Length: 195
Image 1 (cartoon, rainbow, N blue to C red):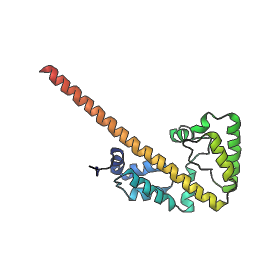
Image 2 (cartoon, one colour):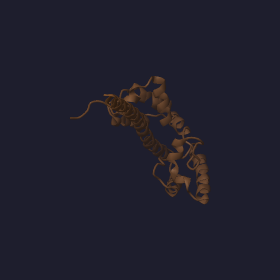
Image 3 (cartoon, rainbow, N blue to C red):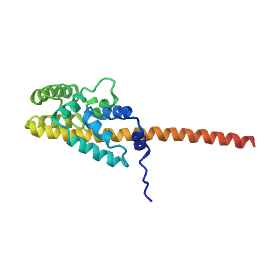
Image 4 (tube, rainbow, N blue to C red):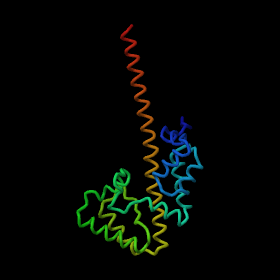
């Protein structure tokens, strides 16, 4: 029998107050239009429904919305200080040789000069060399082609971040339930000892 209830993490996200849900969505993507569109479609019965809505919202971003989303991403090789998300996503650059880091800095600057925005790539699971190679290749793209690649990469990043949001929400609830069960069991054991 299939459950008609959303997973715990998604249910928790669905139940968030509007301001808290917007803040959570803003952590996933800096585009206000994207976040508003996802917020308006709540509640989501499944995580796949949330991801599908994210894909549609990403596809519908205007040029200005896309620029706003990209502004929330640090350059590859320079994650935001104190930001575990960008550090985790860019972990492929963490142990990279200094020569590769210097090359990425130069390539990032060339890319920003050519396209007017940060080089955006779904860095999760990629090595520093893979990111460098992708950056080299994409420097030759026409601006229109690059804009569509950026939109695709943003969609991938948004899906990963939403999955972590729903997972994190579910883990928090599961931990709360486990703690409550542990306390209930301890109370039951204490009662049994008294008898």
